[in-house]
Image (cartoon, rainbow, N blue to C red; front, side, top):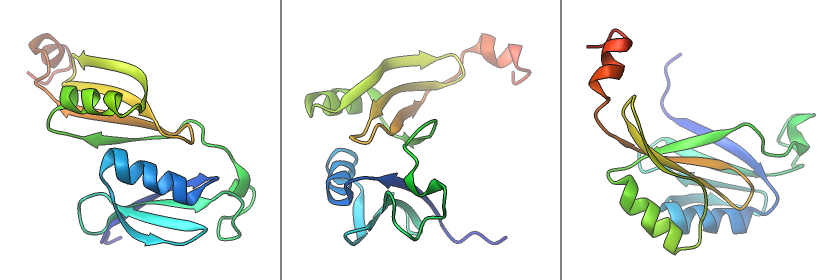
Length: 137
């Protein structure tokens, strides 16, 4: 398979409200917006995140009406602490406070208005102990 782009899709109740939330808080650019579908660019040509109206006929049964559960996306950023402060000030729901992980991430989790989980990640150096314990040192 020769991949030319990548996109994920999330079933939601309110396309317009969801699109505005992701545009406002995460800075994504709207490329398509219909009453039942929207697509937002992730900052790289060919990489999109789409929202599909829950129940729309374009989605196969029985997934058509399923609620969000067990799924998430991650966004890699330059400064997770700054993004945390900005999103908290905007009233975005923080579901896990920032933490530095031994495997090389500073990150925190937010939730969109549909209950969808978003991991905001800043790469940091892994701990030397973790690298050694995992055969990477």
